[in-house]
Structure formats: C-alpha cells, structure tokens
Length: 494
Image (cartoon, rainbow, N blue to C red):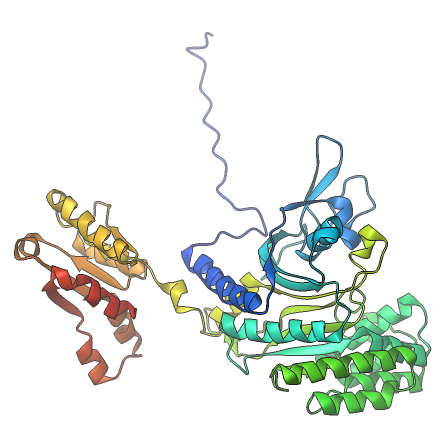
C-alpha cells in the first residue's frame, strides 16, 4: 500500500480546557480588579510608599518556609531547573521577593524602606471553590523599623485602602493581636514545647466554630466530634485552660478596654508585658491617625499566622452580607492580613531586620464586592456601539467612533453581519451605555439617533421609579451631530 492510498488518521484535537486552579477573566473581572488596584495604590502613595515590581520567579531557596527538602522543589510552588542547575520557582507571595530585594540592595535603600506591590502569585496547591493556583495580591510593607507606630500606620493604611476599594465604613474591620501576648500566656500556662504551643493555637482558631466548650476540650485532653473522630488536645491543665479562654475572650469594648482586660491575664510575664506595651503604642498611634474603634479593634482570638509573625498580627474581616448569583448566602470572612515578621530578611543577611506589612487578595476582594452588590460601576461598563446599517456608510460610522474616542469615550462600530435587532442585543450584552444609529436620513440631515441602554436596563430592573428622572432621560433621541458628545456624556454620567 502506498502512502497515497494509506488511510488517513484524524487530526488530533485537544480538549479546550483551562488547567485546574487557573481562571479565565473577562473584561468585567479585569476592570473590577484594576479599579481596586488603582484606588488602593493611590492610598499607599499618599502614605509615602514606593511602588516596586519584582520578577515572577525567585530562586527556590529564597522562599523560606516553602523550600522543600526533596530533590525537586515543587511542593507548594511551581518550580523548574535553570540551565545552571539552580531551581527557580514562581513566587508564592510578594513578601519573600521583598525580603530578597531588601537584603540584596540594603546598602543603597532608604531606611526604613517603604514599598507597595501588586501582581500575580502562584501556589501549587489543590484548587477548590474560591481557591486558585494563580491570583493577584496587593501588599504594603515597611522594612527597617521596629517601632509599633510602623505597625499602626500599616493598619491605618489598610483601613483606608479597603474603604477606597469599595468597602464603606462598617463593611470591614481590622482585627489586631500580638504573638508576644500569647507567648507570655503560654509560658505562664506551662506550654513549653513547640508542638504544644501549636496545638493551643489550632484550638483557639476554632473558637468561632466550636464555641468555648469545644475549645476547652481541645485545650485539654481532646475532643470527640459528631462523626466519632477524636482530636488529641494540647494537654493543658485546668487553670491554664481558664487563662487561655479568658485571654481569647478579652476583646470586649474598645481598644483601650480590651488592653485592660488582657493585662489582667498576662501581666507579670516579661514577653506578655512587652506585647501589651506594643499594642498600647499601636492604639495611641491609631487614635492619632483617626482610626476609630469600629474600624480597627484588638481581638486576642486572632491567632492565624502567629507561628509566622514575630509581633503584631492583623486580619481584615468582611462584615457585609454577601450572596452568590443564585441568592445563597456566602461567607468570605478574612479578606486580608499581615503583621510583623522580623526574621525574614535575616535569612539572607544573618542580621535582624524588622519588618511589617499587610496583604490582601485582589481577586477575592473583587468577588466579595460583587457578592455584596458593591462592584465598581466602571467594572460593568462597555463601549458605545455604533449600529451598522449599510456597508456604504461605513466611513460615517468610523468617523463617529473616532469622534467619541477622541473625547475619551470608548466606542466601537459593529463589525458583524447581523441585522439591527441582533446588533442591539449585542450592545446590551456588552453592557454598552448607549447605541448610536446613523442611517441615510440622519446622515443627510446631519443628525444622529441615540438609544439610552443604561436607562433601559434600569427600567427593566424596576430601580428607576422616579418620573422626573425618567423624563429627563429620553430612551431614544435624535439630535444634531454636533451635540453627540454632550448627549453621550450625560448618559454615562461624565
């Protein structure tokens, strides 16, 4: 059988699929994220923080606690071997690259070094609902200052940044704790081994879910859950358990009242007293910065990350009621966090370098805003669409598009092959504020017809019930071509 007569195999067609944990984003998502980043970056720059962008890859040994002990470092990170046999990994967060950059350039940097950064990070972890392998973070950090006021400024900036991103006052709160307080408490309670301390942290972290009685069991001998599984406890004695529970429940009232409650539990411990003094200075600075008790509180039950942070730790919690597209309640909880990490830069230099910072997931915050019905208006705005009636008039259509674009208004000419009704449906799907109709009669008369699509959507949703407002915004109008820009700007509100 010759090659010409051999049966031909079908061309291979790969399945169109995105890798698990890597999301495709359309304009709505990208605009929402861009709006958040621009608003938060403006806040960071007002506080005097410098923008910094580091590369996507870092050498694997620079990733600190994420450096695996296997030959191929891909546990938790995406790694590859360079041509010089060194392992590189996509950055896991934005803090490890900052530590490497600060250590590498310390002699030439202004000290303290204040920087903010945003960009994608990658984690080689099992994906799940709301958990991606690639997502965008936005960080602000101060490297080189051990003063508690540096922590306070980061907290104040986080409060202002989240409000600028679209969370009004009362929609989120910054919760503050200090690792030194818990260390002092654990020392007094007789928890000396790292394993026992970690067991205490894990128990306290379940306070919201299990309540005081459940945590009490986990602080002691252990707990049998509803499924019959037994979780071994931290092994603390009765009085020590009472002290831990008193500590985590001390967050009652404002920051000052909470500090007084904590002092009753940890006073007398050298490390606990040091933590109290730091929190008192943070409180005083926050008060001077105008951050009220309802915006940032001291909450001793915040323990996540305390094995990583060396002093103050803070977590941003979303307070808004949120629902998914089907109307089901969704709980977002934490939308950002940070704290003091004085040991990270020292990994490179061998010398202690104090540092503090805050980070939030931009994609997570955008999803939370959408679920709360507070998505930025710019995230749902498409271009003005010029309806294509006749190929012979294409030059006129592009002239109108050029006029709108020159005025700073996004615009496009419909370049498909459908009729007018599908074109209007296309403009509506693009979330266009308006459609421009320019037929032969309008061209001859020097006019244009504008259909207000924003108004149509408002009326369809039942939101616009003000008769005077509707009268001022005709659904469709024919106007002189010279009035086009002013009319469109009135529709888009700009």
